[in-house]
Each structure stands twice: as C-alpha cells, then as structure tokens.
Amino acid sequence: MPDLGLEVLFKGKNMIRLLGGLWAALKISLISVALSIPLGILLGILMVRKEVVIRAVTRIYLEFIRIMPQLVLLFIVFFGSARAFGSDISGELSSVIVFTLWGTAEMGDLVRGAIISIPKHQYESSAALGLKNSQTYFYIIIPQTVRRLIPLSVNLITRMIKTTSLVLMIGVVEVTKVAQQIIEANRMTSPNAAFGVYLTVFLLYFIACWPLSLLARHLERKWG
Amino acid sequence: MKRFRTALISALSVALAVSAAGCGGAADSTDVQNADNQTAEEQTESDSVYRTLDEIVESGSINIGVFSDKNPFGYVDENGEYQGYDVYFAKRIGEDLGVDVNFVSTEAANRIEYLQTGKVDLILANFTVTDERAEEVDFALPYMNVALGVVSPDSNVITTLDDWNPDDQMIVISGTTAETYLIENYPDIPLQKYDSYATAKNALENGNGAAWANDNTEVIAYALQNEGYTVGISTLGSQDTIAPAVAKGNETLLNRINEEIKALGEENFFHADYEATLVDTYGLDYEDSLVVEGGVTE
Image (spheres, chains in turn red, blue):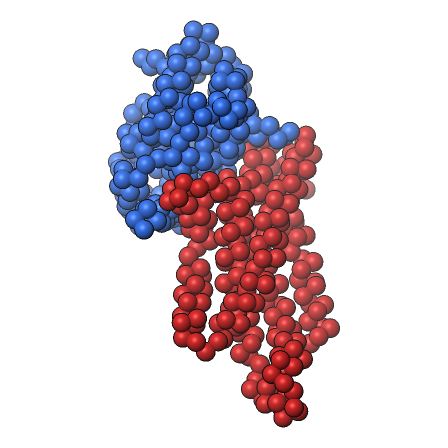
C-alpha cells in the first residue's frame, strides 16, 4: 500500500472541514439548480415562440452565457459589479447568480430541444381526437417533454456541482479549496497528502453526483 | 455605460490572466502581459473603493486578505484556524486597532482586484512590492525581504537561466513576481502557469516542468523539506521586500499601518513572529536576512 497521506484527514477537524466544504459547494449548486429549472423551463418555452424579438433576445442570452467561461462570469459578477456600481456582493451570492444564469441558459436550451423534438403528428393526432389546445399541452406534449428532459437535466446538474470548484477564485472556501488548505498545512509532515486528499475529494464528488445518475436511470427506465 | 465597460474589461482581463494559467506555453505569456497592461490602463481612470480607518474601527471588524494555502505565511490549520507569519501580524493589527479580524482567502492572481473593489481593507498575503503593483495599490512599510529562486529536481539541477533548453517549461504561479520577472527578462523561457501554490507544487512533483521559479523563501523551504530537489539558483533578480498593501489612496489606513510597523519594531515584533511561525521552515540561519524590523531595510 503506497503512502497516500490519508492520516492528515483524521487530524483535528479536517474531515469535518472537508465535508463542510462539500456542503458549501452543494448549497451553491442546489440553490442554483432549484432556481434554474423553473426559469429554464420558462426560457425554453419563450425560445420556441414565433416572435422574432423574443427569439433574438433569448438566443443572444443563451449564446452569451454559453460562450463566456464560467470563471469570467464569476469575475464579472464578483469584482465587476463592485467596480461598476460599488455594490458588495458576497462570493456565495455571486456564485449563485452566475450558476443560475448559466443553468437557466442551458436548461432553456434543453427544454427548447425537447419541445421541438415532439413530432408534429402528436399535435395533429390530439387535435383529431378533439382535445383543446391546453389539453394537448397538458396530456400529450408536456409529459413527453419531461421524459426527454430528465437524463439531460441530471447531466446538467452534475456539471453544475462539479463546476463549483471554480468559486474558490472568488474567495468561497469549498471542498477543493479546503483540500488545498489541508495539503498545504501538512506539506512538511505528510508530503504525500495531496494524493490521498484529492482521492477523498474525488470520492466526495462521486457520492454527491452518483445518486443523481441512479435517479435519472431509474426514471428513464420507469417512463422509457 | 463607461463604468460598466471598464468593469467588464477589467474583469475579463483578470479572468484571462487567471484562465491562461493551466495552458502554459510562450504564447500565453504575451497574452497575459497585454491583459495586465490593459488592467493598469483601465484602473487609472476608475477610483478604488475603500473604507477609511475610522469606518473600519467603527464597523468593529477589518477584512484582511491572506493566503489560506501558503504554509508558513498564511494557511489554515487542522482546526480551521488561520495561521502563519502574515496571519500572526494580521492578528496583532486587529488587536491594536481594537477590531475583529475577518480573514479572506485570496489567491495570488486576484489580490489586487480584492483591494480595488473594496472586498478587503488590507492585503497581508506575502505581497512582494513592485513598481507595477505600486501603481495600483499603496504599499506600507516592508516587514520581510525576498528575492527569487529556482528549484529543480536533483537529476537535472538548473543553475543558470542563460542556456535554457527551449523544450523545457518553467513552472510559475500566475500573478507572482517570478512570472513578471521571467516574462520581462527571459521571454524565451516557456512558462507553465498555475493558479495556486498547491497545483504548481503538484506539477513540479509530477515532472510537468523542468524547474519551478518562485520567491526564494519558498524554494529554500521546499528543497529543505522535499528530498530530491535542489535550489540551483537562490537569488535571481533584485532583492525585494514584502509589505502590507491597502487600496490606492486609502491614506488613513496606510498611515496607521506604517505607525504600527514602526512601533512594533521597538519590541522586535517581527523577530518574535519569525520565531513563532517561520523557524521550523527556514531555521534560525535565515532570521536576520529575512526579517525586516520597523520597516527599515539595509
């Protein structure tokens, strides 16, 4: 067994701190996910509207958010807002804002894709059965859209959880930062700690994301 | 609108400097340099946001930006407490001002931005004084000496930078003095840039670069603690100092910190600080050459 320096995890409150860091990361991503899903559904519905102005605005929003690296968005919100408006937004709030903007854009595009992937004959058949427009959406289109969305949105949620490792650049101490702190504080006594601590961080991310994958697979099988 | 543009451009250039880090290569170094120039230009036209000494004392707490992963200057111990040479000094400042110290974890690449946006009142993050930085922030009196050094594996010790093998890369941390010095004086050396101390250290240990250029204190300590690495170049460039920094124009706080440093010189505070925090890393041999007492350098 090679020396992984795992003993540093059991020094003082290190394990608790690492879990606290994971919670900080999950809190940011879960709040953002909770806000992104309804906003994204709204955006997706807007994106399939026929009005040119709405399409253009939503398209520009989507492309802007997608092209900008998340790190740049974090800097704009955290430092840029302070510089432009003198406002003091905390690192956590900045992260939630950026992740919600990003999640909404991505979710919106997924919803748009799912809606337009419903074949035209579904609408026509339901009209032929005499369903009203609202009934068509409620009984025919939305249930099919949601099923198509599940695996894609779970993928997005896990991406959001993993991308929280960037927020250490705006001073939020999350799991990756705590890991670096632990490694550095022990660099003399446990020079190999980097391996063991990062391995633990990997396991923590895995534990956080795996249940989501399982849930998605379960729902896919149930509804597929 | 202009303010928004200014904000956008400066945020972009900082992010560019930071995100270029992982890639390395000679092309990046010019990008980063441009970005830095741009930041400097933009900042001369925008005012820094800061809290005066009175506002800080009134609020009952001071925000001090320190490193949280740079043992022994600023790090977090196993109980989650900030420790180190910079932190020891920060705690004393808090005591003497009669305020609580709120430590903010900063990275080398975003220290200036933290000050200019008023996110912290004071930076005590092993901040080396340079002319470029002095245009953007105000430095107080120094409390430590530093030069650059280069550490490399024993199997291929680098003792000079003059005949650098162009296939080799030099590891640096973005935003550090070492990066600026190498870009200016050795533009042909391909740099491999990392965001944080921890990642740069991993890179050297994994053999991603031929050598690592950083402050000499860092490389001396690194070589002492890690067998198989040697400091081939122990003083590179000019002797620099490390000093606290405040936002440009924050004179009340600057003057207070300068008075503090002078007063602490009388009780040999920084020697005590060294003996409490640095002696395990550098030994007593380096005490007088590293410590600056009362802000007076030879």
